[in-house]
Length: 417
Image 1 (cartoon, rainbow, N blue to C red):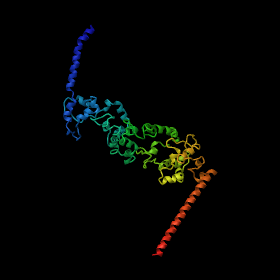
Image 2 (cartoon, one colour; image 1 turned 45 degrees about the vertical axis):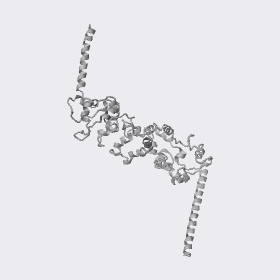
Image 3 (cartoon, one colour; image 1 turned 90 degrees about the vertical axis):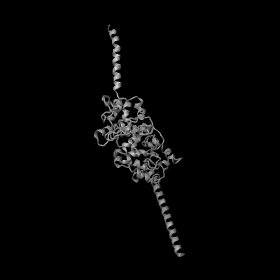
């Protein structure tokens, strides 16, 4: 009996649902209705803000392609009965669809700045993604497409938000090897802002959770430079980094942060003739040497060697710190895998000096007179001193000869008028 009543009332229920839906569709504002006003290019708010919406761009956007209407985003218009509506409208809440992205943004440095209001500007979804013309991030025309993203971030960080490290700090990325690979070569896998800093949940560099904090920078760079990360973690630096020692150098200490240049670029911090200066920042620091038990005066003793002298005169082929100790996988001399282990020195020196023997590699590079405490190294020091004396004597004799010849020419000229 109950089933018969249900079957008899079903057509009435369906008719009611159809009536309500038709009523709603009749009263709801369509996109075409909105464009009656917002299709006017000259339409502006009382404050002078343009209110024009390009129909073609809106329909071609990711939202237009998904069938999302004006009222789906501007939810406060759903209750408006008469149009034109009052303005301004409430800000669009992207989080009603993109909940995860909104939660991440709420934990970001951008939202923290919005809440403090110290920067004088506010940052929202539209500032990076656009408004009615939003494209997928893999679309060439999207402001968040890999090649376009640096310019998107720089609209604020280069022009509006001052950097604590100076005006050229952010713009330094545009000179980097990463930017050249990205924009000039079109390699979209090359590092851009979001690869290093993240997308929605960007943290301050001082935040331990930041992708570019000292705690995480090795892992962040290692996302692309996997082999280098592995070598670094096996090195003396990497082992101390894992222990949590804060004074150990990380990627940005040697290569810088934004303006990372190729080692072959003369302006690079790790250009062959500048490597010694980079290493000496730590290895000539007396306080660090005492704390961690390593010898200092490394730059001084290197500069006094033939290698250092040649490097200071611009010779790029001569050995520098990395040539002997390695680049990222620097190991202690006691490590059998170290390039400066006594068993490996002939091969290391042999890379520049083919046929180098074990005796060839016995000479000390980093040695001060007080550190030479064996007969073997005293001999090397004496030989070096003799060479310096002979070279100085030859130069002195040549200068005397030149002066005498010049004087002879002057006297001859006076004698013959």
